[in-house]
Amino acid sequence: MYYGMNPSHGDGFLEQQQQQQQQPQSPQRLLAVILWFQLALCFGPAQLTGGFDDLQVCADPGVPENGFRTPSGGVFFEGSVSRYHCQDGFKLKGSTKRLCVKHLNGTLGWIPSDRSICVQEDCRIPFIEDAEIQNRTYRHGDKLNITCHEGFKIRYPDLYNLASLCRDDGTWDNLPICQGCLRPLASSNGYVNISEFQTSFPVGTVIAYRCFPGFKLEGSEYLECLHNLIWSSSPPRCLALEVCPLPPMVSHGDFVCHPRPCDRYNHGTVVEFYCDPGYSLTSDYKYITCQYGEWFPSYQVYCIKSVNNTLPANH
Image (cartoon, rainbow, N blue to C red; front, side, top):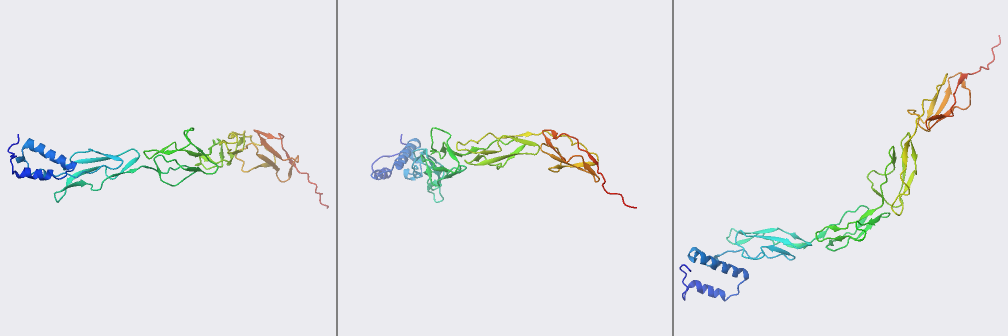
């Protein structure tokens, strides 16, 4: 039912349509024509303010190259939203959506006005310690160009794939490290001459172990990083030394220790005896040494009164 539409000859509306049908129509225009006739059939042309030329729509927003749009087609009236996505290996540059709005002059247009595009995804240059990486643009499928510093060797997580490739999402596959000898264990009750922040050491590095006072080094004092990226020997240990008791007391005398001060009589401590003025040692040997908790030699030291060889005065 047409509700008052008169398709008789001379109708200005039909003449207008016939003239327009003689001109090429765009897909967007044809969709608008079809929609207008559907509205006219439902509500009647009297309910519409004018012909389909008065139906305002936004122009087709386009589809970004190497991407896609939702909805993929249709007529875009005021309030329509167009969303954009990119294919794998590409990232969207611009807004993810555009809105069809009416401008102050009454026309419809897209906000934002700039079209979004899909650009190829790049892999950022990774930071790899003790390595030099060629500064260039890496794209999907490119191989990482890396050189380890001298004394370090490249190691890949996948031992059967000695390459790192740029993935389509902008990340790296099988990213390597430049490895030297791993940081050796520190000896308890001792120290080693390396930085506390260094975790890997190049081939040829030599480190030295030391023990705190009161402890003795057991094992190799020096370790070297070999070409197979292991140390020349296992880390040494610092073993506690037995402390000697107080040295024997000497009447009319005393002692001093080496090295000073003598807070503890550790292994290797040397004690030197001396006598008070007017007294002298009974032996020329005046030293004893602490060895594994005992004094050596183990003899008692005595100070005796010196013999006065001065002749009495003549009267």
